[in-house]
Amino acid sequence: MNEIQQQQSRLDELEMKLAFQEQTIDELNDALTKQQFMIDRMEVQLKFMVGKVKGMQTSNMASESEETPPPHY
Image (cartoon, rainbow, N blue to C red):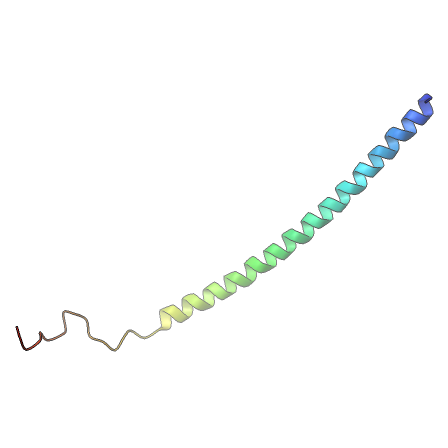
């Protein structure tokens, strides 16, 4: 192989690597965008659930300190 062919081969290899890197970056960007969307959606759901839990009424049962002892005591 002469020098021009070697340089052309190296250039082709670099162009191929660049193309694969661009594809990988695009795929990673897509994955990151999807993950951020999922995180945002889960944050909204978590805030909703926290609001529901905070708004829940307490049980209708009295606490142990408020209960009268059973008749056999």
